[in-house]
Image (tube, rainbow, N blue to C red; front, side):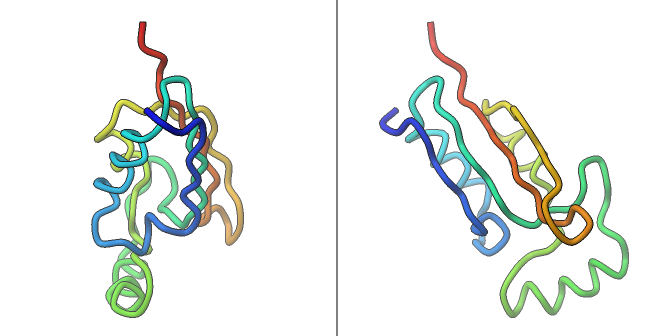
Length: 104
């Protein structure tokens, strides 16, 4: 409950435990605070294609998991999605704004 804003720029797809990362961001965020996320995720309500899963076996070894689902990650928290916009590469990169509800 320390920071008004947290920025997670190209981090959730490269770290071993994105759920722990988002939980830590939630923990340090003040009630009413916002988190900005920019990273590559599968599209909302989509499953990774066979080709993407195959490519991920290489990309995950070298630099990044390209099969992560931000909704599944966020669902492990009490954070709310305020906005979710496609960025580059046909929506494979996304920009999200999350918020932590104010406590009463």
